[in-house]
Image (cartoon, rainbow, N blue to C red; front, side):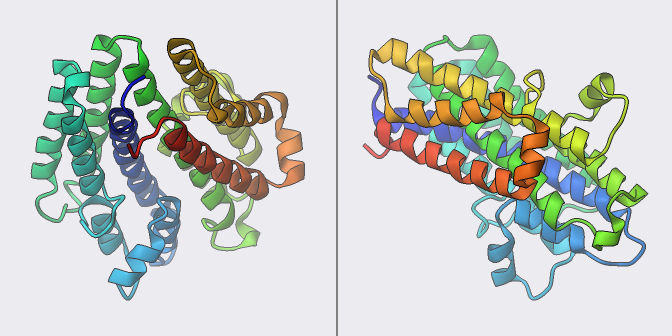
Amino acid sequence: MMLGKTAGGLFWMCRYLERSANNARLIEAGSRMAMTRADASDAEWISVLSTANALDGYNERHDEINRTHAIDYMLRDRTNPSSVMSVVDAARNNARMVRVALTREVWEAVNDTWMRLKDALARQVSEKDLPNVLELIRQQSAQVRGALHGTMLRNDIFNFCRIGTFLERTDNVARILDVKYYVLLPSVSMVGSSIDNFQWETILRSAAAERSFAWLNKESGPRAISEFLILDQRLPRSLAFCYINLARNLANLEAEYGETKPCQAICANILQRLTTTDIDAIMEEGLHEFLTRLINDNNGLGTQIEEDYRFAY
């Protein structure tokens, strides 16, 4: 069995790289949604910071929430452990620790990501440069993912990488949906309005799913978009797709090591929930309640995987 520290390094390297791209998408979504405001409110940035689980840390650093400070905190602030620069630093440190387990192409892609983003984020990003910087962050994450898929053996190394990616992606998509449901609208009276619909479509964009949704759906709206992002097994960022692949990667580890771990039962229970329910049942339970339970269970699965494979050793 692989050493726990090596397994943990691979797992967290990929979690952090996924988080960097997710942050870029969140910032883009916040910018687009802010354009729907008739006033000068910065409420979108509350939702962006909440989605990234960074609101408390931001409030410790700043007296008010505004676009400039929120973007800088999400991109560059080293006191924010989830800022793009912080997670890219952490991804590179983990890659260095497990370098002998990586192909040359993967290591170079991670190192190139760190060097290019360190340069791009050396100073506060101007409004004019922001779209290009966000695109660079997404491209660099995709470059690492491409090197991983194109050059790595499909063994335990690959499986720990993919487990980290899908756990992080699940958390991000669930949080995007949950924060939209509770925070984004100016008031309850805006539900169903053109602003509401635009914001839901922006959620699709933040999940890199707007084109796919348009191909498959003639009508938009909160219900259809929630169903797509939660249950559609064809979408690489849907919750169901993530858990199908998590179960597969954990099963691959079981086959390779000849041992069943407790984390597999947790994963199987969550997967069953995602593949045997429908959007009607989710809405009846309450979208917020469903997503909160899933986020907590997903976090619990991550903790169990760390314990089962002894990441701390």
